[in-house]
Structure formats: structure tokens, C-alpha cells
Amino acid sequence: MNGKYENNIILSGGVRDLDKFHDSVQFIVKADTVVNAINLHNNMSLKFIVEKGVTLVFNVFDYAVSLETNVEIEADDEASFVMNVAFIAETKYDLNVETKLYGSNINGILNVRGINEREGTVKVLMNGTVAGETKGNVLNEYAKVLNKSDHSNVLIPNLIVNTNEVEANHGVSIGHIDERQLFYMMSKGLSKYSAVKMIEEGFLIDIMSDDIKQKIQNILVGR
Amino acid sequence: MLKIENLSIEVEQKRIIEDFSLSIPKDEIHVIMGPNGTGKSTILKTIMGHPDYKVTSGSIYYNNERIDTLQANEIATRGVFLVEQNPTEIAGVTNAEMLRAALTDRGIKESVFEFNKRLSLSCDRLGIDKSFLHRNINEFMSGGEKKKNELLQIDVLKPSLILLDELDSGLDIDSLRTLSNGLLEYKRETKASILIITHHTNILEYLTPDKVYILNGGRIMMEGGMELANKIEKTGFKGAFSISER
Image 1 (cartoon, rainbow over the protein chains, first blue to last red):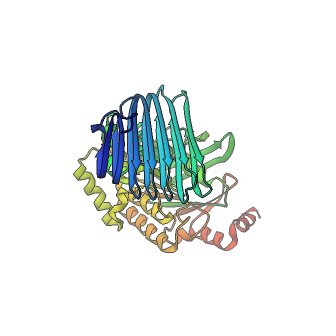
Image 2: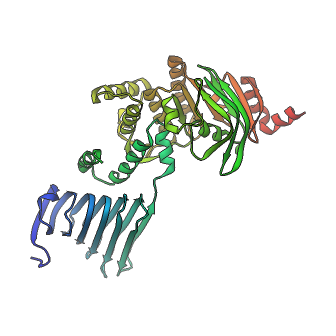
Image 3: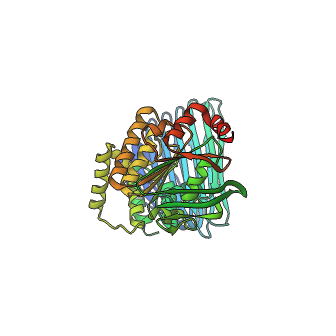
């Protein structure tokens, strides 16, 4: 048992909903598993240990008033993980993701998309570490935020690579809604309100797995 | 139907179009030809209400209503449809979702069953695979698929004026023929008007124009029928302008 976490849970495949679990959990991923999480709790700490040859897909959607979340992912040889995070920040959104690639031939992707709405402040810190004496690893960290307020956005994609044989990429962007997309949608007869809503929501759910998309859309209907 | 009177247009404080006039009656095809950079696309985007294109003088009327003061969605709901040269991709939004919102914002409220039936009929009529409806708008589509997608939108949204910006751009000859036939079929059924922008005559083999305008330097230099387009094909734009000046 890792002392930092209240619970140890074994994931042995299939699709799981995270909201059944406690605020501080260490998951041992023993078979290919999709974990879906909608609206994480504040101060949640999660750790995934992805065992050899196993794939983890972790989809997170947050419509956050105020949220601070810490996620750790550790991966062994031949493992894969994809963490997709989409959020709408009403006030504060603070996400800290640590990834550690201890083995070789691991494929890891972090994909974060958010909308900073009204008076939100956004901080996304991605720390990826590739261990020494490993080879064939791929690690990508991406974050994009659409900014609708004048408040601050901090996106930091760190990569700490201790080996020469690795493919590691990172990229972040902070911008406004794409004016070409807005004109396109309005030229089809959508009001500006409908067009903006669809473009923003499409931007968020585009990175999500199909099995969680509908749930997110149901939440966004009332936005 | 569409009437443009003495229109001048600026983009980023630069005059692009000067004193441009045009009138397109119902059920007619008009074409504006001209070399690259003469402002052809500017005219279409201005008709469609693009916010970057400023009308500095003149006016645009559609069905006797002034539309150059309206926003793009207001113009679209009055029956105008723009097919852009390279239709924009929108991630995470399917064609069906966009079409449903477009119909709703037009005041057309129908059940999911009725809506699906409408889309299904359009796909069948155009020979388009129904999987198109559930693909993200223009994402990962070839040039031909994007234009086919626009044709599907036309069939669902039923515009009465279609603006085609370089429809033949990025299309092979078979795709161009298929799309043109689809547009002609739509025009036959609805008596819609079509305004084509092109610098080639390829598309005019399929969509024969009632009137041809030659644009240069932001002004109409010549106008006529299909014979003018044929002359341009033979002489090129420079040749036509020099003959005209003499």
C-alpha cells in the first residue's frame, strides 16, 4: 500500500466510471481499461500504475467551479496510456499531471483542452519523465485553452528525458475562438450563440472516447 | 432576386471592389470571372455578411430586402448559401448536429425521427453515404468530399441563392460533373439562382451561365453570355482586356 493514497484498486479491464471511488486512490492497471471521470472532486489525488503491455485510457471531463487535481501515471515496458482532459473553468482550475515512463517501448499521450470562462484562472502543469536506460518510448504532452476572459492561464508542458532513444513532443496554445469556424457556422444559419456553443463544445469533446461523449453532451446541454 | 447596386468594399482599409453592380433573377446562373486577386471572392464573402469585408458605399438587396447590414446567419436564414473554396473544418461537431442546429435556428422544429428522415432522404437523393452525417464537419475529408458535404447541406437547408466560390478547386473531373449535376437537379426542383466565381471555364461546361461578368481591378470590365466565357478561354484575361481597350 502506498501511504499517500487511501485506497488501492485493481483495474482488470473494461470501462470504469471513476466517480464511484474515493478522493485518494492508487490504481493498479492489470488489463486494458478505460476509466471515465466526470466532475472530479476538489483536491483529488489519483495514481495509475500501468503494468507491462497494458493500455489505459483515462478520460476526464470537468465543469469546474473550483478544482485542484493531482494525477500520477507510471508505465512499465510495452504499456500505453492516453489521458484526455477537457474542462470548463468557471473560477479556478488547477491540474497537475506527473507521468513516469520506467520501461521501454511505452506510448504515452496527455491531451488537455479547456475553456477559461468568465473569471477563471487556469493552471495546467504536465511533468513527463522518461527514465534512463530505456528505449523506444513515445511521450506527447499537449494542452490548448480557449480564453474567454482576461484572467490568467498557465500551461506548462515539462519533459525530463534521461535517455537518448525517445520521441518526446510537447505543445501548448492559448487563444480565442477561430473566426473562420464562427463565420462558417453562422453562414449556415446558426445564430452566433449557437455557433460559439457548438464550436466550443466540439473543441472539448473531440479528444474524448465515444463512450463518454454522450454523457458530456448531456451535461453541456444545460450550459 | 439578388440586386447589388454600386457596391464598394474595403478589407483592412484597402479598397478591393469599386462601384460594382449586378442583378440575378430567380432561376438563373451568373458567373464572375477574372484573374487571381481581382476581388471575386470578396464579393461572395460580402454578400454572405463576412465581418471583415466592409461595404463603404452602395447596397445589396435580396428579395427586395437590404441585406448588407445583416449578419451572416440572418442572410443565411433568408435563403443565401455560400460554398467556400476550401470549406472550414470543425472538430468535434458532426454534420448532423450542425444541420439540426441550423434548422432549429431557422425556426424549423421537428422531432428526431422527422429530422433523421429528412437527412436520410437527402443522402439517398444525392447518393451520399449516410455515414457522412456523423462525421465531423469537413474533417479528414478530401476536396471532393468537402464539396459533396456542402451539397448535402444545400439539399437539407433549401437555399434559394447559392454562391459558389471556385467550386472546381481541388476537384477531379468526375467529382466536378457529379456535383454540378447535383446542383442542376436542385436548381430544377427549387428554381434557385446560382452565382459562380471562377477563373476557369471548366465548371461552365456543366453549369451553363445565363450571364458572364469579367472582373479586373475590382471593377466589371466586360459582360455577356457564354460566348464571352469561351472567348476568355481562347484569349486569356489579358488578351480579352487588350481587345476591349482597343
